[in-house]
Image 1: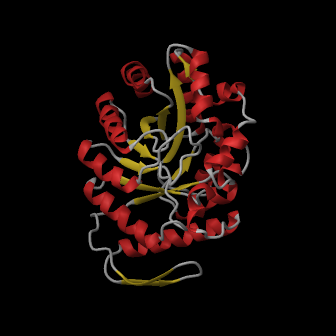
Image 2: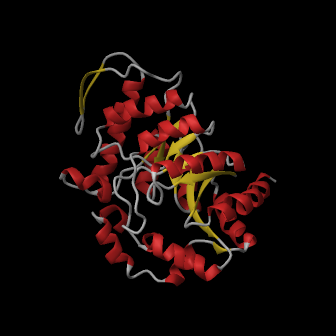
Length: 316
């Protein structure tokens, strides 16, 4: 399993993200994930820069491949515009760009006042959005009239030599089936052997990407408190992450998440063997590329100690 680094747009401003990309490359990480949000999950996280601007800066700062983890190309931004943004990113990254996509969260997509569709319709919109983007990546003047989107006489002029790979996020059987049917890869945030097995059994092609969080630092309890302060929302069950519309709502719901739940969900503290065990669960589930986010301020310890140990361990 290859190990990449997650640039968390919720935790860090644009300049910090570019500097972390440089440090990730110097440390030997395989590639970069970058989150695409309009809002952070909670105000304590405190950031949410425009991802496409940051990708442009990262392209000049490193030679690593970059994948959005993930972009919603359905409501807040029309898929024809995402097609242009992704094509430009692939050009400036010289082909090292992949577009991770998902059906989105109300947190980011409600801001223009559009209705938030039910899950089945969101997946239907996502499938059509992928169709629109791939049409435009063929080059030339293109038009599209579908159930959800209309494109008239549109042409993306700056195209990469090969169209971006589209990796599709799936957290349930229906989304996983969509990923297997139309994706160039599959994206998840948990070591879910059953869903990854479904993706492969349904002839899904391409790599399985996953995102995970750690909080490496000298004191386990302090690390748990850091994650609980910055990312309590990872303990929310079911569809809440897709349905709650504002950071304030996430803060209210996250009051139900205790530190014990965080300690179970995220490897915290200085024990590298414990961290490795948690990462191994992703490898055992069939993940090809795991992108790790260090939560909190202990970035020096993460890049100087955690990274060389884990990258060597999983390389072997």
